[in-house]
Length: 559
Image (cartoon, rainbow, N blue to C red; front, side, top):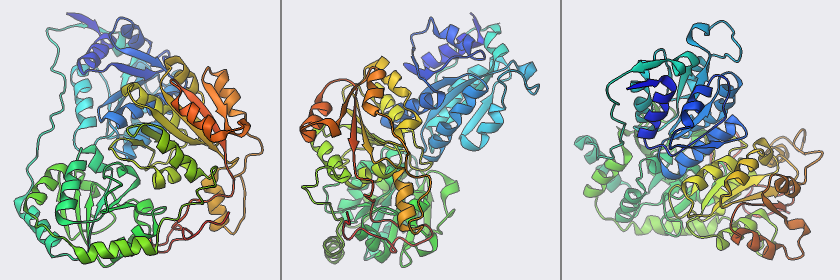
C-alpha cells in the first residue's frame, strides 16, 4: 500500500472510530483536508479554532470518549490553546491535530510558524511533534491511549506539512487503540485500613469530584454512601454523579456551596476525598478546610496526592475499583445521630430561595427551565453568575448532564460545548445557560449551530454586566466598580436571527413565561434573551483567602 502522511493520519482516525472532526483549514493542514475529502469522517467547519476545540470538548464531556479537532499552524494553533488548557484542568480527553510548516523550515520564522510543541507542553497531558511519516503509525493510536487512560486529558499532535505530503509504502495498518474498562487491583492492606477508618468514624462525609464521572463510578459512590449512611458533598465537576433527591446529598461545597454544606464539612471527623484535587474554589483556605477531619484521598493521578492537603491515608488508583473493594468490607451503619445533625443543619442554614412569585429572578428562571425540558437534558453553561446559580439549583440527576468549565473558568465555553454535546446526543435536548458577557466570547459559533440545526436552546441571562466581577466589586472591593458594566449591549435576538437561529427576547413578550416554554419546546436551535436585574448576587460567597465557614450572604436575599 502507498499512502501520504495526510492520508495515513485520516485513515488511522477512521480506524479509531472517529465520526466527526471539527476544525478550520489553512495552508499548513490543507493536505489533511484533501485526504479528508474522500473519508467517511464528517467534517464540521467551526468559525473559530477555540470554538472547534470546545465543540470537541462538548462531545468528549458528554460521552467520555476521545474527540478530535483540527487547526492549521500559527494563529490556528494559538487559537486552540485556551480550550486545550481548559481540557487539561478538567481532565477532558481530546486530541488536537495541528498543521505545521515543513520540518526543515521550523525555527526560521516561516509564514504562520509558531512553536506549537513548546506552547502546548504545559497545557497538555502529552504532545507530539511528528518527525517522520513512519511515526504516525505509533503516534495516532498512542495519542488516543494517553488521552483516555488514567486521568483523561488533551493530547496535541503537530504534523509538519512536508510529512503530510510525503508518500510511503507499507504492508499493514497498526491495530487501533481500544479502551478496556477492566477492574484494577487495589492494595488489600490499604482498602482494609480505609474501611476501618470509615467504620470507626462518627461524622464521615464523601467529598466527590470530577474523577467520579471520569471513572464512571457514580453507582459505586451511591452504594458506599447508602450502605454506611455517609452524606455526600459534590464539587462543581461532580454534579449529576449523586441523586440530588437523596437525604444523604449535601449539594455543592465551597465558594458558592450551601451554608449547611460548608458547616457540616467543617464538623466532619473523616473526609473521603474521591477523584478530587482540593481546588481552592471547593475548599477555600486549605489550612482552614475540615480542621477536625482525617482525610482518605483516592485518586488515579499520583501528582494530586498530598499536593494541597496532607492525607492520613491515600490510595493511588482507579476510584471505581477501589470503591467496590471498600464497599464490600465496610459495615452497615444507620448513623442516626449524624443524619439527625445533617437534617438539623439543613433546617438551620438552608439554601434560601428567592420569592417564588419573583418570576424573573435568575434562580427561578433556571428552576422553571428544569421543570419544562426533559429530565435527561444536557446542560452546558458559560462562566459567571449564571453558571453558579445553575450549579446551585438545577436538579442534575445523571452523570455527564452538566458541561461546564471548572478549573480554567473560560467564558465562551458554553455555546460550542453545547453544540458538541448535541452532536453526540441527537436524541436529547441541550440547554446552554450563558450571560451577556460570556456569549460574546464565541458568539460566532451560532453560525455553526445554524449549519447543523441541532436541538440546542441558548438562554442568555442578560444583566448588562460582567456579573461575578460586579458582585465581587460590591461585596469585597467596597463598591469600587470599574470595567464591569457594559456601556452598550447588542440586540442578541437580532444577532441570532442574522446567523439563522430563531430567537426570542423575553422583555418584548406579553407573557414571558409562556414564551419561554414555547421556545424551549420548539424543535431545533433557539436563542432566548432574558433580561435580569443587575444587582442580583450569587450567595453565599466565600471571599478569597477565607475558610469555607466564613461565607458572606446566603441567609436572605436583599433585592
